[in-house]
Every structure is written in C-alpha cells, then in structure tokens.
Image 1 (tube, protein in one colour):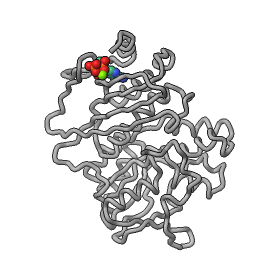
Image 2 (cartoon, protein in one colour):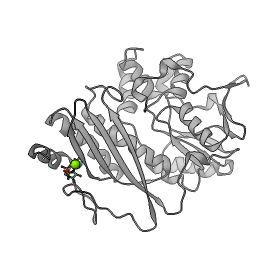
Image 3 (cartoon, rainbow, N blue to C red):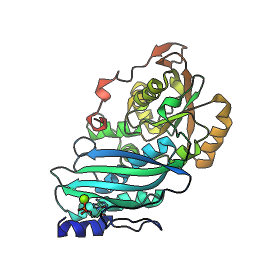
Image 4 (cartoon, protein in one colour):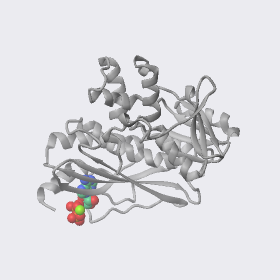
Length: 327
Ligand code: ADP
Ligand code: MG
C-alpha cells in the first residue's frame, strides 16, 4: 500500500466499530457473531457505465452501493452486522471521495451496519464491490427463494415503477415534468432497503426476494426455485401515483418489468393476512397482496375482464436497460 492510499483510507473509510470488533487498520477485520446467530453474507458490485453514469452524484452512489447489498440481507430476513468495501477509482479525487463516504456512512449509521474493512485500488473506471454481513437466528432457514407453497398469498412492499420511469427520463426516452422527475429519481438514487420488514417477516413469510431486476423476473426466480406457478391480479399491483402522467399501459409495464427496485416480494400463508397487515402498519410500509402461488408452474396475469394470460418476464426488450443487467 502506498502512503497516499493509507491517508485516503484513514480519512474516508476508517470509522468507529462496535465494541469487540477490530475494524480498518490491520491486515484483516475481526468480529464476533452474536451467540445463537448464523452469519449471512452477500456481495453486489456496481460498475461505471453499467450500473451508473460517471457523473452520477457521489453521495447517492455511496448510499446506493450499500443499499443494494442491505436489500439482499433484507430479502433473507437478516439483520446487518457490518460490511467490507472494495473500491476502484481512477484517482484520489477528494471532493468525490468525501461525498461518496458521506452517503455511504449516513446509510451505514442509519442501519447499524459499520464498515469494517476493504481494499482500495486504482482502476480506469469506478468499480464498487461491497460485501455485507448479517445475522439470522441459528437454525432459522431465512426467507429463501425455494420456499413458496401452493396457496400462499403473494405480497409486495411499497409502490412500483418509479426508478424505471426516472431512468427513462434520464436516458431521454420520455419527458417528465421537473417536480415529478425530482420525486421519482429519489427511488433511483436513494433506494430504501426493507430491513425491518425482512426481519419482521421471519416466522410469517415462506419465500422472499428483493425485486432489483423487476417484479416479474424476480418473482419467476422464486417460482422456478420453488417448483410452482403464480397468478397475479394485475389491477392490484401498486403503481407509484406519479406514474399517472404516463399511459396506464406504460405505467403498468414499468411497475411489472422495471428494475432497480428494492422492495420485497414475499409469499405467506393466507391465514397470516391480519398479522402481515399489522406488520405493515407497525413499520409504516405499504404491503399489498397481488396474487397467489399455484401448484401448476407458469406465471399468469389476471386481467380486469377475467382473462388469464401468460406473463413473460423477458417480454419487453425495450425495457431491458443496460444498467440493471447483472452478469
Ligand atoms: P493490505 O495491504 O494488508 O491488504 P490494505 O492497504 O489493503 O492492506 O488495507 C489496510 C487497511 O485498510 C485494512 O484494514 C483494510 O481492511 C482497510 N481498507 C482498505 N481499503 C478500504 C476501503 N475501501 N474501505 C474500508 N477499509 C479499507
Ligand atoms: Mg488490501
């Protein structure tokens, strides 16, 4: 490591860690997993040109690079424990690093997920690779993709379509009014990982997934892993109210297909509806039932006129934006 790198790490990434942890500064971090808990680990990478444009706000990138990882922990029902940051930047640009670190640490503090180590390299483009660590009660299977059961309700948190429509505006594909764009871009730049919801669903939900690649595609992962199918009541899929400025069809496609969404889609027995409604109320998170898991494979949409048609997750190529492709 060069002296410059050391100063940079010290200045931006050396933060206090909980009692008993060893954080940034040694050859490796040390942490204890609380007694009776299992370790849950995930990693998501963000690459310039693929997941974000080079002139995106560094503060939002700091937030988002951690948020997408915390969303994966949330989708397992896990509680955050800490994270490691792998960062590649073309040069030590202090204005950029300081904004990035502010956005990153703000979310880390808010979610009780301290930065405990990482690696910093010089690279041609900005590359961010975060490894997040979390915990689940030992012996609990977590909210796995393969655990949906026929007859389960399908639920979704929040409202859908906002990030995709904001991105379409940024790409010049549609034109939104300034105030609508400002509201929608919050979903793209500052997504909220549904951590409290994920943990609250342990013991209630069977399967869960965060729908970062879009509702239909990610629900299909659950169906394939669980060996079952689903019927979605299309009129019940909650669409962000600002999408009323688009045609209903465009808004619905954005809600069903649009990526970069960090809401949780989960399945749960119909007998638990009241408890799930109560959880949503307690957490102030909108939870909507949007369909049912079927024993027969296949994903179908129930239309207002009673018609049932197959829903193809890859059916709308023009919405397959590059930024959301995960290789
Ligand atoms: P080494 O040469 O032993 O790999 P490094 O120079 O890579 O050491 O890292 C020194 C210390 O700084 C380590 O504790 C490492 O975890 C931490 N570190 C390096 N880069 C980052 C980063 N981007 N975020 C957080 N900690 C970092
Ligand atoms: Mg290193």
